[in-house]
Amino acid sequence: MREELLKILNELRPEIEFEKETALIDGGVLDSFDIVALVGDLNDAFDININIEDLLPENFNTVDAMLELITKLQGEE
Image (cartoon, rainbow, N blue to C red; front, side, top):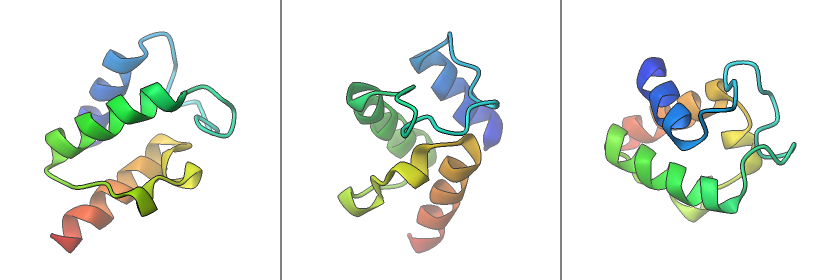
């Protein structure tokens, strides 16, 4: 799952070292357009549905936070 997430992120923004970033949203590394594209890619790749209430900075600031969100949403379906 981690490898798939990193592949998606690297296709979105290849210049960013996602494993080292701890404030992807809070630090302005990813902008709103990136998030819209990312949410669509994550929904498709992991067969989940990220809702508006899930669009919190803490869910997208790190790779680990995104993995937690994906795991949580997969468990709900």
